[in-house]
Amino acid sequence: MPSYYIIIIGCQMNYSDSERLASYLESQGLVLAANEFAADVVILTTCGIRQSAEDRVYGLVNRIKKKNPKSVMIITGCLSERPDVKKRLPGKVDIWLPITAMPQLMDRIKEVRPQIMAKEEKELKDYFGVPPKHQSSFSAYVPIGNGCNNFCSYCVVPYARGREKYRSAREIIKEVKGLVQSGYKEIILIAQNVNSFRSGASDFADLLEKINDIPGDFWIRFASSHPKDISLKLIKAIGRLFKVCEHVHFAVQSGDDQILKAMNRRYSAKHYQDLVKKIRESGRKYKRELPLAITTDVIVGFPGETEAQFKNTVKLFKTIKFDMAYISQYSPRYGTVSYQMKDDVTRLEKKRREKILDQVLQQTALANNKYYKNKVVAVLVEGKNRQGEWYGKTRSYKTVQISGATGGDLVGCFALVKIDKVRDFALSGKIVAQYE
Image 1 (tube, rainbow, N blue to C red):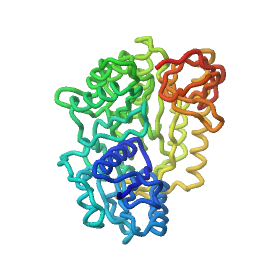
Image 2: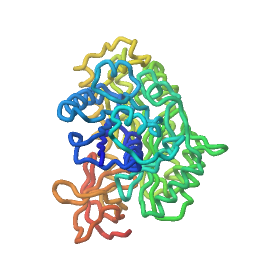
Image 3: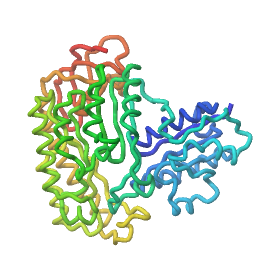
Image 4: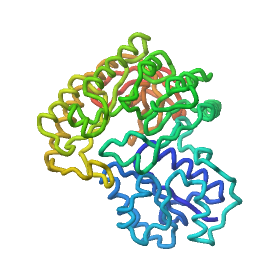
């Protein structure tokens, strides 16, 4: 039987798309290969956010084609329509596939390799109609839409994925109900900008409420949110809907208003700080079990960023006291507005700025985590680490190492854990009880 293998690079949406790709290919009679060198069809679900992710693709394609020259090489994800990427891989890639063209994939494979036979295809109008092959038995990504309308000056996503298109609330709720009935404990709603969601008269806050009302013991997470679209209605929903986890991720990118303007982010540093204050107040108002954890993304060394402007980002970090931040050094992206700007902050200076922010983050994360000392918290167990200890996440997305468990497989179970040690990015504790 023909075989396939998928390599995933990048974000949660790429993981979700790959789950649908796997399901689609298996519905056509393909089976999962042991590795990329043994597969008839190899798919790279690519990320173009940073140069390092792009460079990884070039290395992978060349290595796979050298060891497995007869494979059908497919590029999907954020690099699938980049003309500059295509020029760097002449004759190496057989199919360049925008993820929305998934329903036509087998036709294209058969054009390249007629000997790869497939079952009779069902007609699909939308790739969201493909049921995913979930990699986890307890935590599921549920895409609510695809694409982006924001056109941040540094970002390729609107060019790679096109304009925003959202699924109907009815379709999403049906999928979530099926997952909950199948025993899933964590539902992660994803899109490039979840809080732009619209379905008829329903917005994202309404969608959260409808999912929160589904019977069952499960958690709701979502990512990612754009600060300009976080409404008071959504903030209230985050506070009062108790299946929604105490964690909000939304990218700040910079703490300087001039840089934010150059990035085309359409909010100020003060507006971002006000949102954080209101989110945390909403959690306290509704007496949430845990403090609302705030995580973010930030870019250092954007074109023209001065030392004074960088210090505004440092000041914002110290003011907000993030629980986690994903700090990246600016990388020019082909086709974006900032690609035309002079990349005038040296690599060494970018590295220095990243290190400074990371030091502030370590301090604020540790200070926030001290809240958990001697507290008993719910943890969704994800697996075992290299030391053979169970680990999982709290509702506030804190990683917890668990000791004291005796017998049985805890993966996908909820555990009550008393925290006895806190570090900047992890907690440790002893299991008190477990439940399904």
